[in-house]
View 1 (cartoon, helix red, strand yellow):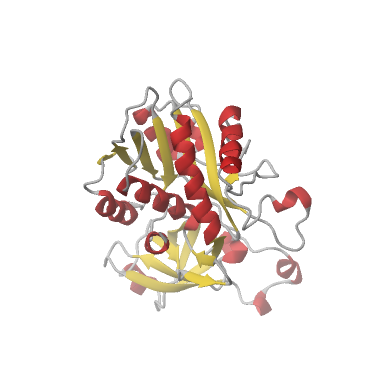
View 2: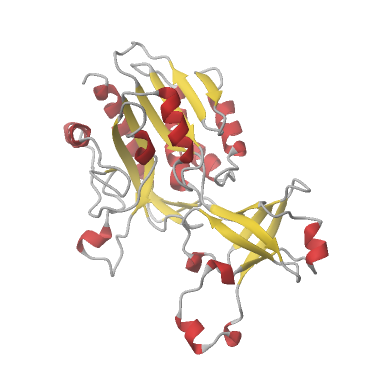
Length: 343
């Protein structure tokens, strides 16, 4: 499944501009399930299993990635921008990006620039940069030239190769959450024991917007949210601040900033992992959030669990995971989806 993960990660699809990701997923699942696209752009799929359960299960992941949007074209031809999703400005400076031109339809290469260090005051040099002090240089001579290529509202993306390094580590942009999408594509293309809904959501990174709508459309009894979550397992992070660790298996959360997860499902996940010799861990901090925040309180309420891959440098062009965590997360999700139907 590594090649599938690579292919999906390298497609550009910032929140609100997920169409290229969705179109490729449709090509991959066509003929294996029923599907439709909702008005916001989420892809809702129904996969017929060997049995029809009494309760309805939805498995979901989000298609969108963090990125940028052009807000203003400056007199010197550079582009002011804002972040789409939570991105630390310190990981942006000097990065190569592509701007998806709505005028030419082409990708324009650019570099994120900032005020030259010798032009910064002592106070400015000691402070972390802010996004509004940065700009994208696309090589235009002035505003008139840039306006022939770019419009306000055009999206920009990190340029990042998919690389394997170390023993089993992978670096790429958009692992959050193309990893979850890859798992669902593989499940849809195979045989499953029970009827299941699979939802590829849009606009998670800007406020769980796609899942807010799709959860009401599906109206599930149970939901498994597939995600990536921050691992801070490096020197300088001690105890609870490490959150989770690469190589220690899938992360099953008991609580985050948007959800208090179903306690029975939480315990069930760890029981299944132990029974099948799978490593499994939880987050040691109540932090972050994901589509579960919208799903669990939709309709009459949905019993919800999240299974995440531990990931270093999340929301950057160089997110890093261990491939065995990806594999073990997938195994756990498949086993969990079967056992939930027996509750």
